[in-house]
Length: 315
Ligand SMILES: [Fe+2]
Image (cartoon, rainbow, N blue to C red; front, side, top):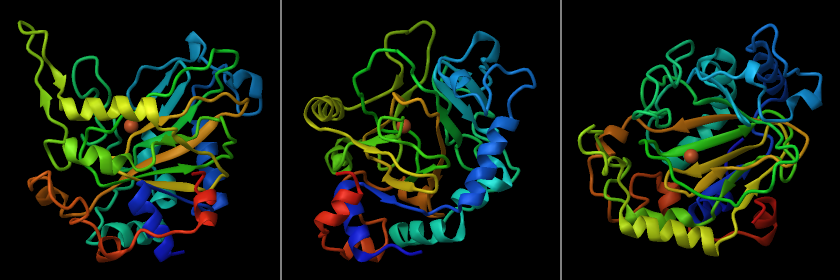
């Protein structure tokens, strides 16, 4: 399975690309099984009982371990991100070949049974887990429980702060529309790219106890303005689909984890791709041609695609 010229054009223009049927069904099923096997023996949530899967998690099922989070509506198993099964699934030969078509260069290799994301905890006190610190595999298997009768919440986009080049979200179970699929703001990568001070990183101010008013992530005023505009003016695309479907997304693309308003649990593998040149690329100017680190094919494609492809891409 390789990407067509048209698919590459779509990715360049919109910053994301859904590739249906990119993962083997039997491996998807295996990883779903591993997810349920990773629960404590006496868990209230059960694989064969959909009612037990309606969120939020019961207090007795909760876990604050950053390598296996179960809180509210989110169930994140990061231990599985370094399991051979997940690595074979999301860093398969064909997915790596497609990622290389986009990125060029040499892909960084994931390490089976290596250190999972969350091994070093939070990126700052009380902050999120840093996907870039001590993560030798994929980010992990991320599930979103059905929201039940919880009120609909407004969508709110963000970009990720750690250095990588290409993200992947792979559905390991069917995810109907409204079912917590990954949400992307098409074309936002091109609008946000010029607002960053660093090419791949996100500047962060250390936490000083005696200077509490200024700390953590630093966003440029231009970035914040653009994010507000994206939230106000642009309708996100929801990447719903079938088990085996994946979506590639540009590292500066605005996105969010969708809320799950169906009765089906959302199950997906999240992973990052980058090339062995990233450590050099990240030292270079943030401005200039945003595609200069990408493959020749991406740099040269003309950005044209058919209406049929746009429909397949939920645009
Ligand atoms: Fe994110």
